[in-house]
Amino acid sequence: MLEIRPTCEHCNIELPPNSRDAMICTYECTFCKQCVDDVLENVCPNCGGGFCSRPIRPINNLKDNNYLGNNPATSIITHKAVDIKEHKAFSCKIKSTPPYER
Image 1: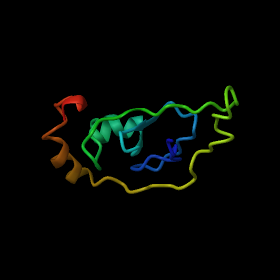
Image 2: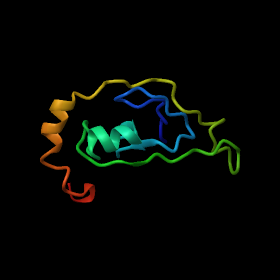
Image 3: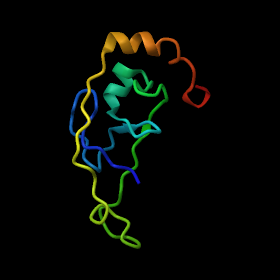
Image 4: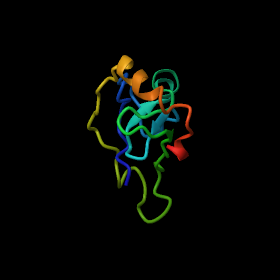
């Protein structure tokens, strides 16, 4: 089950559970859309994969207690700003390759 991390790992902007700006990689590294587009260029600095929109967990109990009230988002912040120079050197080799081919 997704942790639904509360902030962008790079800029530390708040990303509440219903945020449409939250992006995740397959390991659930969490960044805001602006950082993914403008800083990371769709290359996760931790694994090299791409990003997709983080799903939004329902706030209401629509079926079988599968909702935010029963399975809350984590409150643990993972903030480790990306070294932009280091990331550019890493991502320049792979950013032109679609994530599904990396």
